Image (cartoon, one colour):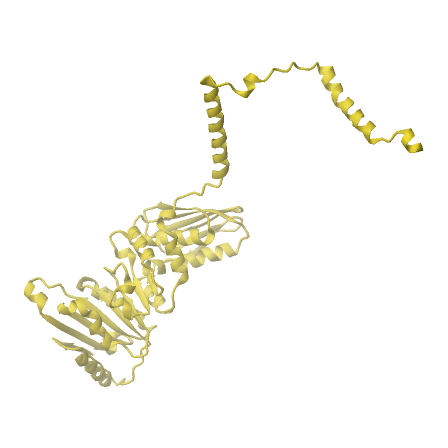
Length: 380
């Protein structure tokens, strides 16, 4: 069932929701959360389709906020709210309200959304595109316990990750992180099968795919080893290689669906590692509403620390350089006319070979004589 409302209010929308539920014979509200989708007109259809598919697992009230751009100064001063209320088969297993904001009301989207939230139910805000740099400080983000962004949709994903790390607030998450959940599970399971120490890691994937950076940062943060990020033709993540003391462990996925896990001393195994669609990613994120500490730790590791090798021999090399520079300074001073201790000291003549050989024996005999008491002393 679909109800169109033009130039309406939040109160009229709530009445239309009650009317729609009664019309389809389900007056009770069986939703478990409120999902707020903030998007534009271009991406609204795909985002709403993914949310409806995810509602089969998580029945929810979905509020789609579309901020319409005002072309003229006159349109910017006027305010209008249009809504589409969908219940029943039109909205999956929950309820859907598509809100289109015009004029000055665009800057007050939180005031429109607040009366439509389910009482005593968690709120999740999802930005499929054009997410704010600080989601927790956004007026709509401040209403939510969980804030979902997608760095993959940004123009500069690597720079976006850095901004996300600086502005991270418990409850923030990203679909680029959700995409690597099967990879993290598979790699953790592979390491549980061996007792070797990981020495270095290489992650291969598309050049502008932030999931590759997140996986590399997670491995570097957890294993405390140097991690190299290598670009490939894709699609998405294509492989991970871990160099261990027992041999390499590799997880290769060249076609985006089937991967091969190879562990030294074991036969290679084919594992299903297909690329998941947005509906599956959103459904996974809605399963947990608590802060993701693992994501926070990996994000704060920093993209700049990848592709760097720690210089473990820095202290010894510095000592060697210091010794070399000191020797060079001493040599330079001697060359400048300053007398060195070696020049003023008398030169000792070398002892004959036979005398040098007898000298240690004489010293040993003398020491033995001092330690042995004399006969007179014994008699007394």
